[in-house]
Image 1: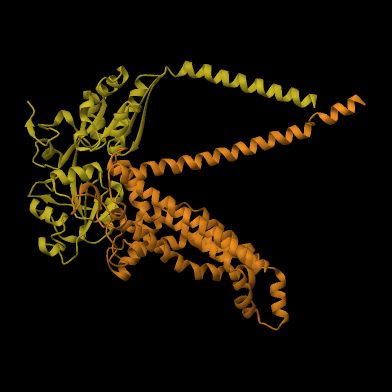
Image 2 (image 1 turned 90 degrees about the horizontal axis):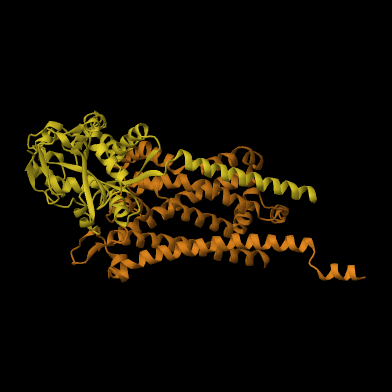
Length: 291
Length: 309
C-alpha cells in the first residue's frame, strides 16, 4: 500500500516536471508569432508554399494554412477567428458578408477555361453557344458542329468560387442549369476525361492532356490573353484581412506581393501574377487599364 | 470494542473505491449525454432558423423541387426545396438494402448453418475486412469501375442512383451479413435439434425454423445497414452525380442529403440562408437516424417477447 503511494507520487512529480519543461521549452522555441489563413482551396497551394518559404526565412514565425472553401474563409475573417481569409471571389459577391469591414489584398489571378471530353469533336464555341449549352438550351454536340452525342454538364458545387466566376464572366451572369455537381476541380477534370460528351470548367493550372479545351469566340485560353483581358473568364485570388491587420499579417501579405514571390512561386504554381496584368477589374466587373 | 465500532461505522476502503468508480463512470456517461444534447441543440437551432428566421414554409421545404438557396425560385421565395435530396437518399437506401438483404442472409446461413467451420475461418474475417475499408476507397472504385459499367450497360452518363446503389450495396453487405449471422447463431440449439428429430431435412430446418426464429435479429441487421447507407456521404457523393434534380430514372444524375451537405458547407457563410438550409438538411439526417434507432429498439423488444413466449 505504502509502496504504491510512493510510486504514484513519483509518477505525479515526473508528469509535473515534464509538463513544466515542455511549457518552458514552448516559450523558448516559438516566439509566439503565428498567423492562420483559412479558405479557398484554389488559393491554398500558393499561400501554403509562400508560408513555408516565409517561415524558413523568418525563424519562429508560423503561417498556418487551412482549406474549407471561400465561404468559410470569408465568414471566418468576418468573425475575426483568423488573420487571413482566402477567397476566390470578391467579398461583395458573397451574401452575408459585410465587405466594408474587410480589407482586400489581390495576390494572384487565375484564368478559367471550359474543358470538354476529347471525343466531342468541337474546338471552338461562341459565347452564345456556351451560354446555351450551360443553360440547357443546347443538349447535343451536333448543334454546335460536333458529333451526335448528348451534352453532359458538370458543374462545380453551388457557391464555389470557380463556378461563380464562370457564371459571371462566361455566362454573363446567368445561372447554369441544374446538373451534376462536383466539389473539386480535380474530380471535375477526371470525370470530364472519362465521360463521353461531358463539359465543365477548371482553372488553367488544372488543364492537362486528358481533356480538351475550346476557344471562345476564337480566343485561346492562355495567360497572355488573360493579361490583356481578351480572355474574359478570370478572377482574382484574394487575401482578406480585417481593417487593421497586425504587423505580421501585413508583412506576410507584402511578402506574397513582393516581386520575388510573384515572379517565381506564383508562376510555378500555375497562377498569373497580379504584376503582369494590363487591366484591373473592380468588384462590380468594371474593367480599367493599369497604367 | 470501540475500535470495532469505529470501523463498522466508518466507510471501508472498498466502499470508497467503489464510490469513486461509480462517480468516474457516471461522469463519463454524463459527458457523452451532454455532447449528444449539445449536438442536437446546435443542429436544431441552426436547422430551425431556416423556418423561423428566414421564414421558409416547412411544407415548401419538404416538397419543393428547386434547390438553389442563393436565388429566389418561381414563387418568389428562396429556392430551398429539399425533395430531390430526400427522395434520392431514401431511394438509394431502400434499393441497396433490397439488393443486399438476400445476399447477406444467404451468406449468413452458409456461415452458421451449412459450413460453420469454413464460415468462422474464412468468411467472417473477409466480411470483417470489408467493414474496415474506408469509404473513399469504395467511392474511388465506384468512380473507376461501377460508373463506366453502368454507362455502357444501362446508358446515361453513368452517374446516378444505380451506381450509388451498387456502391452502397457492397458497403452495407458486410454489416448486414455479420449481424444476420449473429442473429442466426443466437437461435437456441434445441430448436434445430427438435426440428431434426421430427424428421425435417436440413433445408426444412433452416427455412422453417431457424430463419423464422431469427427474423427480429435479421430485421435489426437490415435496419442497421439502412442507417449506414442513409448516412454515407463520401462514396455516394463520388458516383451519384450530385444534381439537385428529382431522379427521372435510375441512371439520371441525382443527389442525397449527405452529398449536398458535404459539397455546400464550405462555400456558405455561417448564419446566412444558404448555410441554414444546409443545417436543415443535417437536421433531417439526424431525425432519420433517430428513427432508425427507434425502429431497431422496437424490433429488438418485440423479438424478445416472441422468444419468451
